[in-house]
Length: 147
Image (cartoon, rainbow, N blue to C red; front, side, top):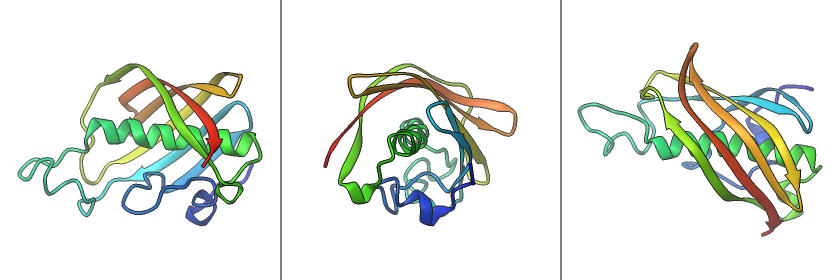
């Protein structure tokens, strides 16, 4: 497996700025797991309002970054791309927990492990870490459908 650069990522996700939350895929094994990163900068469009004097990345966007990471693995495993007119939709989020805030200057390392895939539903165990510290974790379910 070759790491994926941003040009490759946009071929496997329909998201674009400002909602593309994966900067690079570091490693993956089809049908198994994926590791990706997001560089968090003060220039993110949500920081002026969340919060002006104490910028914190919204937890829902940390979950979204983990979901985008999982979606890339689903697209890669299914040999699909955005050009094939498919979209991966959330089907469920379970056991979401936030352990530490994510702030400007952090680099989030997201890992998603495929737990199972049945009848078009994919379930992943996902984590987001900053350095060695767990920032968030969740079980994510998604489905791939025609756009």
